[in-house]
Image 1 (tube, rainbow, N blue to C red):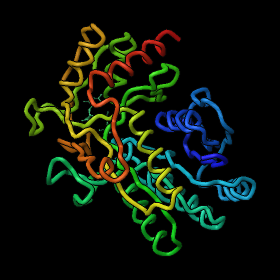
Image 2: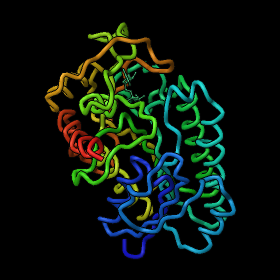
Image 3: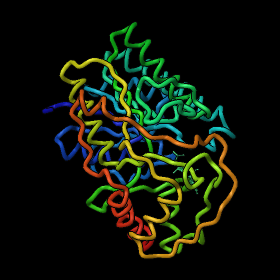
Image 4: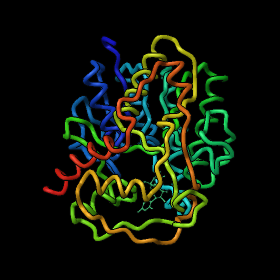
Length: 328
Ligand code: UDP
C-alpha cells in the first residue's frame, strides 16, 4: 500500500474517524474531507484534513487534480431513520444528489475505486431472517431509499465507466476503538447504546423504549449490533480487493445475532453496574421489528473475521469511551 492515498469523505464522524485511524495504522496515506456538520476534527488521528462538502464540485475537482487518490471511502451521510421520515429532502439532497457530484468528479479525474457505507435500512421490513444480500430491497424510510438509490448509481457507473465499488450494508454500528481515544460522539444523540450509556453516566434520566408490542419475544425491536472496528476491518479488506483489481460487490456487515432493546439495556446494566431506568414509549416511525444480517458472503469472499462478536464486549468498549466523555 506504499504511496496509496485514500480520500475519506466524512472522516471526522463516528465510523469515519475509526476508519482514518485504522488506515493510518495500516500504512495508507489519508486525506479527510468533512464539512464538520456532524463530525469532530479532534477525533481525527492524523493525515491531511480538508473542510468542505461532498457536493462542492469546485473543491472536489481541485482536490482530485492536486492529489493522486487511489480510492475514495464515503461515510458522509445523514443516517437517522426518524429524521429522514420528517425531512426527506435533506436526505435525498445530501445522501443522493451530493454523492452524485462526488462520483461525477471522481470519474472526470479517472478515480474509479469507491467504498460506500450502505445500510440494512435498504431492505425494509424483512421477509426472511437472517437477511442476505439477495433479500428484496424495499426501504421503509427515506434514509434507506437514499442509500439504495446510490447503490443503483454505483451499478450504473460500473456498467458505463468501469467504475469499481464495494457497498457495505451496515447493520447497527456500536462500540469504540480499543485505545479509548476515539468513540461515538453525536451532537444530538439518538442511538440506543450511547443513550443508554448517557443514562449510566447521569447525563440523562432514563432510556425510552420505542415500542413494546412488536412481534418479537419481549415486544421490543431486535437489531444486529456490530463493532465499529469490525466495520473498519471489512473496509480495509474491501480496499485491498479493489486495489488489486477486484470486482464490484455488495456485502452485509453484521454478526448474525439479534438483541432486543430490553436485552441491550439489561447488558448495559450488567457492564456498568448502574440501574439505568427504562420507560416504555411510542414506536418510532420507520423502524422495522427485526433486522439480523447474514454476513457469510464477505466472510467467504474477502475472509472477513469479526473480532467483537459478543454484545457485552461491544458495550464494554463503548462504556470505556463514554466514561471519558462524561468526565470532560
Ligand atoms: N431505540 C429505543 N430508544 C431510543 C433509541 C433507540 O428504543 O432512545 C430503539 C430503536 O427503536 C431501534 C433500536 O433501539 O429499534 C436501535 O435504534 P438505533 O437508533 O440505535 O439504530 P437504528 O436501528 O435506527 O439504526
